[in-house]
Length: 619
View 1 (tube, rainbow, N blue to C red):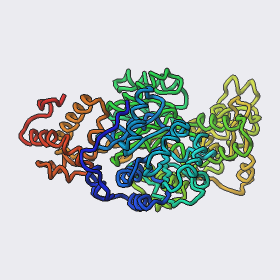
View 2: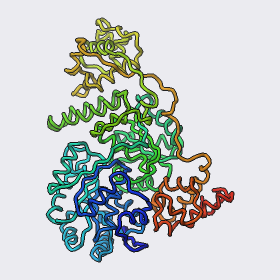
View 3: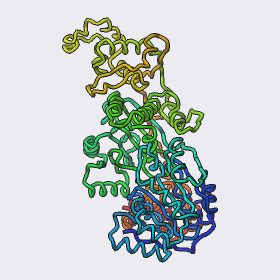
View 4: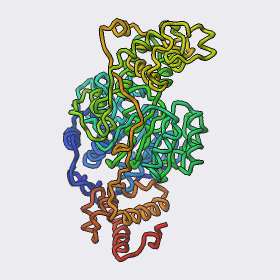
């Protein structure tokens, strides 16, 4: 149940004082201060910040500093629950209204709202737009209205929610109440639509960098994905939380069971599971440390877990927006994290075929194709991945980020014009009916029964590519498909067809350079990273053990007590007094009063030689 919290100190009206006393941070980051000042002055704002960039503070601080209750609209029930719990652990009076509450629990929240006892009310758009809710809000002083996941208003976006279009009603219903629309994923077109739908009366736009410098981006060729994934987790993220995305429900269950059998705790999540099982698995992932969830994209949008150390894709997402949003669930705490993906020709084929077979109109198909092309250009590119990714969101980056595979280990390229011409000619002369493996065999002159029966061993292209091995030819074909020279058979039979744009290449009017793919040696791109020094590691583990004990006793995720970054700073600085602990980022007054002495005791015990395993409640 969502019981309202209670402040442990008088309400704070100065935003900077609120930031320090309630949230434990000394300074605002990036555009946070400008947004807060705009809302404090009663102005509307569209806020675009990357996941983990601190969007929530943009409405939470004004909510505590302005008169009245702040209403936060969110489409994500799980996220509401987690955010309310986090607010309560800061001493903030917060509650939520959604379909998970019993009538009695909802009545308690409504009573607290009517009595002016709430600083923050989180509500689903469907519940907000009920006349009962709107009528009650008419009688309440509102501090602001925050619309989270605002990209859901865009009909061209990947998470469109039709009920978001009705949020325009708030403009006439609550004139003079400042509105914030917040999102982490919006290209230029989506931003314009948000402004048109939610701010026809004017709104200021605050655009932060989409860069997540703590995330290391890596894309590789799919080759025995189970073993690739297992090696990645064991070598770099053993005992850490992560999300693995698959395209099908069947694969999520298969991979979760397989990982679990390999000694890596894992659970599956997809929309086809029983609702109670989905809730249980999501709750486990949020509350447990070191658990891996293997999921379809049905999972993750409402996850506020800051210590996800990796997001892995075993199949291509549908667009750059989807990829950015999904990878953004890693490293929300600002610590080192990985966005790791492997894909193959079959992934490209399936997505192209799905678009071609869709019942959507031609305009929608063309837009979906453009989105897929942009993602493939990112995957096959040889330049800095961060530069390519940010360019999609109209943000310039100099490149050479030093934290993606292409920068850490530059890719070799080769003039593949002649090879591409041979592959395209072979596809054409065999009737544009066969897949990559068959075409590679014809090019290499492999005399299979199938090739002989089709008479393709008598073609002029038979054996003209014997200088390259099968894997290289499949790489060439995959890259040609990614670059748009080839298309998937719209009939769904697995064949490859020439695209109109290949004419210039076949005529020799243009050239093409492709990635030269070979096994990469272990390098900086595949080494486990740690932001905790070897000297601080034992204390860090002791602090984590005590945090875990507190979280289990209170029934909340460990990060609600303190984030990893806060514990790491404690381990490095080793505060011995409450005043010193108050200077640690993330330690506000409420948490200082509630947990301060306990964590100082852990630090003192460690410095006196008490092993973490011997410390009371450490296990």
